[in-house]
Structures are given as C-alpha cells and as structure tokens.
Length: 249
Length: 328
Image 1 (cartoon, each protein chain N blue to C red):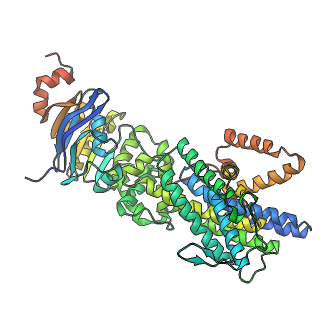
Image 2 (cartoon, each protein chain N blue to C red):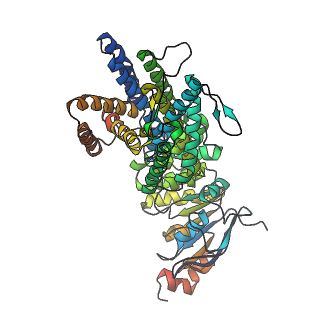
Image 3 (spheres, rainbow over the protein chains, first blue to last red):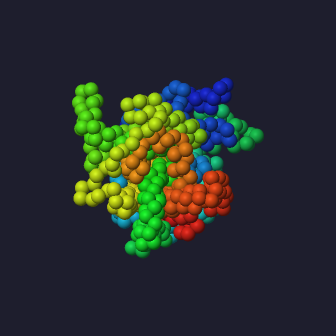
C-alpha cells in the first residue's frame, strides 16, 4: 500500500471562539478525485487555505508526497507540486491568458532571476503555455488580458496554470461556480481524465458534478468531517441527508 | 519585430532631449545645456524609481536616500582625491578618486547595499506602511548627513572640479551632457530588457496579484528585494552625476522633497512605462524653468498639472500618447 499523495492529520483552526476546522483528517490517493462537500460556512475554504499554506493551522499536520509541509509557505508548497485554483479567480489581470500561464511555466523551469532574455521570444516558455491553454480549450483566447475573460474562462485559465505547473495534486475550490451547464459538462469530462495525471481534492457545490466524478466524498459540517465514503455510502448516510442534502427523511 | 508606440515614443523623446543642447548652443544660449543635463539626470534617477514603483508597484517615498548616497559618494571620493588622503575604514583604506567610471561603480555599489538594507526591512510591509517606512529610512540618512561635520554637515560639500572622464573634458557643458545622456540611454535599454524578462514578468505579476505569484511557486519578497536593489543602484548613479552637475552635494539631495519630486516625475510621465521618466523629467524641468521665471509659486501650477494627470490621464503623458500598456 503506497502512501497517499496528500494526507492531513488532526487539523485544528479557530478564529476566536469559532472552530473553523476541528480535528480534520483526510487523505488523497493516487488517481482519485476526493470531493469535499458541506453547507456554506462549513469551513471548506478555510481547510483549503491551510492545505495550500495561506493559513497556518493551530495544530495538526499536512503531509505531501511523504513530506511534512505544515511549516512551508505558499510558494514552497507550490514548488513541491501542489496546484490550486481559487474560489474567486486569482490572476494577474493585466497579463494576457498566455502570460498568466507563462508565469507558471517559468516558475516550474526554476529561476525567475533572469534579467535579459525577452519572455515573449522564449519558446521554452510560450510552447508549454500554449499547450496548457489548448488542453483547457482557451487557445483562441491566449492574447486576451485576464481581466477581459469571462468568468468561466478565468476558471479554465486557473486550471491551465495548475497544469502548466506540472502539479502532483490539485486543490480545486469550486471550479464549476458560475459556469453554464455546457461549461460544467465540459469541465466535468476534463477533470474525469485529469485524475489519471494527478489526484484532485475537489470542493464543489454542483452535486451532479460531485456524484459523477468523485471516488470518495467527505462531508464537512461546522468544521468537522461528519461522514466520509463512496458516493453510494454518502447518498445513503442519514446524517448527511439531515445536515446537508436538506432531506427531511 | 514591430516597434511598439511606446518604444517609438521613447526613442523620439530621447532624441529631442539630445537636440536641446545643440539647438541652445546654435542659438547662443549655453545655459540651456545645463537645463537639458538636469533633465537627463533626473530622468535617470526616475528610471531607477520606475523599476520599483512602476514595474513592482512599490511606492518608495525614500529614493532620495539612494540619490543622495550617490551624490555623497561622488563628493567624498573627489574630496579625498583632491586632498590626497585615502578614506580610512579602520581595517583597510581606499584612495579617493576623480575618475567618473570608478565613482559611478562606487555609487552603484553603495546605492545597492543601502537599498538591500532598507528593502530587506521595508518590503516586509506593504501599502501605506511601506511608504512610511521608506520615508523614515530616507529621513534617517538625511539627518545623518546633516549631523556629520566631516563632510560639511548642513552646509554640504563642494567639488572643486567636475570629476574626470578618460579622454573627455567634463568641464565643457556639452561633453558632460553627452555623458549623462549616454548613461540615460543605456539605463533605458536595461529597463526595457528587465521589463520583458522573466524577472520583469514575475515583478509585474507580483504588483498585479501577489497571491497568484506565490501560488505558482515564486516568492514575491525575493523578486521585490532584487528589484528594489536594482532601483537603488540606478538612482544612486544618477545622484553621482547630479553632484558633478552642480559641483556640490548637500543633505537636501537626501530630503523627502527629493523623493517626492521623483514620484511626481514618474506620475506625470507614466508609471511603469519605458518613456515615462524621460517625459516626466523633461516636463518637470520645463515647468520649473518656464513657470519659475514668471512666478515663485510655480509649484502651484505643477500641482494643477499633476491633479489633471491623476484625474484624467492615469497613464501620464506616455499613456496619453502611446495608449494603455499591452502585455500580450
């Protein structure tokens, strides 16, 4: 049995009296999509922040690729291969889609301390960046500034950036949010294939997508994981239905 | 490769600047040569600030520290060379020099070291705190110079002669102008290269969205610190030339007025734009001279112009002429 790609153990985070994360443990295995669901305010984003490194947990550990990364910053975790998309898109707005992806290619290639060669004439940057854009279907929008992309296109661009980083695991925070039905379907099909490349921890409100994609589902309520299992198990779980799915049964 | 309007504007402005002293000499008004030299040197200092402020979004209100440091390096080295006394650092001593290339290197080194120290601390803050802490550091250097009697204290330090450049008589105004102009062109080329490089991409992205840069695995702090050091080096080089231009260094080069002046230049010209500092410096000196001759309150009108730019032309003069920046 190989070690999970990402494993979280006994994570706690409080904001004053509010326990946003309470003794959360979960893991992400090679080749799987692990969905994290829960009502608004359950602490899903807080948990993602702690995994990505933007927030420090009060206690607990985060291990990634067999290494304790709890004390590392965002940039260091990203360099190890933790790719992330944001609940609200976070891009360099003045840069074109292409240049946003090129930044990731440049980060992956190593040094940003190169002072003279123009990036736009550097095929080692533009080539992989175009390839990543093409994979998410944004190749025709490559030259458009990120600020002028549609909401859905920005989500796609964030995924292209994570792809270009060659991430070894993806943290996707509501990638379907604000997408039309067509966009959701396309993205669902894309993520379905992506898991073979690197496992995905998926926070999502779109239940169709979650039930179609997830190998495992964990349910977060008031900062605690109340249930964890396969899609069938979660659907059948009475507590989950009561707490989250809104079913009176 | 097609030349962008921004590059074209830069070339035109630099050529116009070069034409001013020749036209002035033709018209028998040598005073304008000094004016053009002042434009070139202030533009050079502002190109330095433009790396931090324009590309990196780091609003440094303390660049006078680097400008003045460069000035004092030139003044002190010349004073020691003139007196034939080496500078004594305790463990070792360094002979003074009047050779411009050596003075420049020393100014760049001192400016870079100072920027590394100030930047390492200041860059842990952001926004208003960054503005205030850079201001505080610069004021510290100002009061240090004021209270340092060895090099003139409050009265400043005079250079008997302009420093020397191999094979050139620098006391001839047009020669000195050409030296300053040549350095300005060289630094503009450097700025353009930096801006389009990987380093420039990371720096500009960090200005737009710090989280994004960290998320792809680039630590913004190191990129910004490097930019701040480069910025301080360029501004210090300008300071050394400014000391030679006036043949005088005083603590006023280190005061916050100077820092503010450099920010005003950049905002007038266009922050982050290649030609911004050149346009800004030319306008500023022109304002100072043309309006300063009419009224002592010329800065009131400068303020009006600045207000106009901030309200109606965010991209400064360059933004008006060359349009919005393109990052395709």
